Image (cartoon, rainbow, N blue to C red; front, side):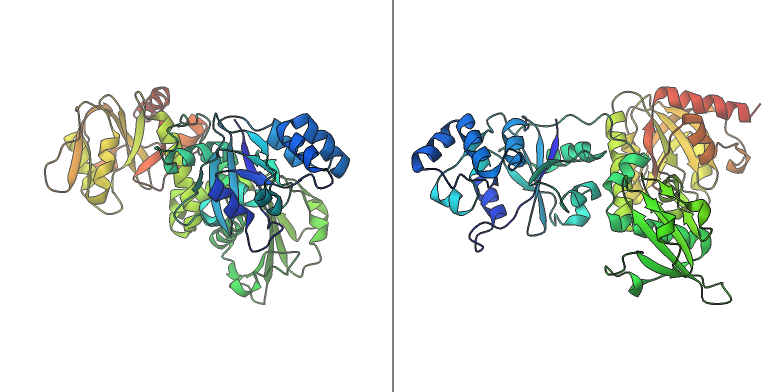
Amino acid sequence: MAVWRLQIRTGADNSIYLGEYCLKNNIIAMGWVINGSTPAERKAASEDWDVYYKQAVAEYGVDGFGSVIRLHEDLRENDLVWMRVNGIYYIGRIASDSHHVFDISEEATKMDAGNQYTNIHWYKASSYADEDTVPGAVNTAFIKGSTLQRIRKPGVEEFSQMLYNQIRDVSQDPFSYPIPKTMTLCQDYFYSLLQPSDVEDLLCMWLYKEKGYICIPSTNKISTQKYECVLVDPNASSSKHIYIQVKNGEVPLDANDYADLPGEIYLLTTKGHVSNLDKNPNVHKADPKVLYDFAVSQENNSIIPESIMRWISYLAAADNAKSSAGVKGIMFDTNRSYSDTDENDMLKAHHIAAYGNSARYIKSFNKDDYALFYSKGRGVIAIGRIISDHAMSEGKDDLYQDVEMIVPDKPLPDSKDYKALSPMEIKKLLNRGFYFASTIKTPYLTEAQVHTLIDALKKEYE
């Protein structure tokens, strides 16, 4: 299965837009009509690919119509195709009855849309369907390249499948993709979903948190080739400028190219290499892993832009969808930030509980799942197993489930007396990152991972 990008342009008649033509006719369409042939030759080309190929080589050269060759030879059933029309993103699936045709009708010829792939139902990517609602790897795929090309960035295939399942009209297309097994909250997928502007914002927020640097909004101009924007250090005795340059992907950067800027420079390439740092002490490399850890850390939740948080939540939800079947472990916030009593009440009653809008999370637990009590600022302080058959209520806006405590097996006088596994220890023990900013910490844990934490927490009590 592959994901493709179709680049749309205006046709021969500029009053008719080729993208709208594709939407109206449920097709992929592109040019490379046979202009120099006779009507009989064009008809023969429409009926036989080999005939079309020979005529196209004569007219465009052997390397002049690669997108048509890909259209004819490379598209497969269940492939997904992205298209952007008037700034709106659409996605469509290659169906079992989709196929390549060379349309020689007057309308197709006038539109320069003779090469078509049929039976494509297009759907808006969202109610807005603008670039903020699609992965950065999809958005940047439209910047340059051939008319039809494959998108190979991490996460795009999985995202596209999950999105198509959500937005398709089942009466038109009952097909559904399986839940992707590889999609997960990790550094590679995280950056592949971000827009370039998101990565710039992330670096600015990190510099603010770590250094106190403040961005000057008016300096964020397209015309500045060397830097994205200028920041200032409010604590410096004299004016100090900080410049940043950001590239999302396998793009190399050379510190020599920025050394003449009058200040401190931070370079970030999420998968590329920064060279000549040793020769330029005023140029620093921003570590993409450090920035990823910064983005998913609960303590930074309030300053991470909403557009970035959306993708973190999306990846966490994908993790949870994969692990919902079978026994799982869920790190659940004890509400210590907002209540002085909830944490103690839950531990003493052997309950996992929530109130108001958060009550719905209790339904995420099934019998035999593990509940890991997560105390903000400390980490996991207790672990137990769900023994109730379903969520229960004692009042109007609360839900709870009964828990058989495992560690510690008996309640202590106060939650402050409980030992804890910190977020850093949890990451190290399980060799993976987690999104700690929500009531339910994601992704869910496997039973084996839970037992790893049980053993580690028991050791804290020895």
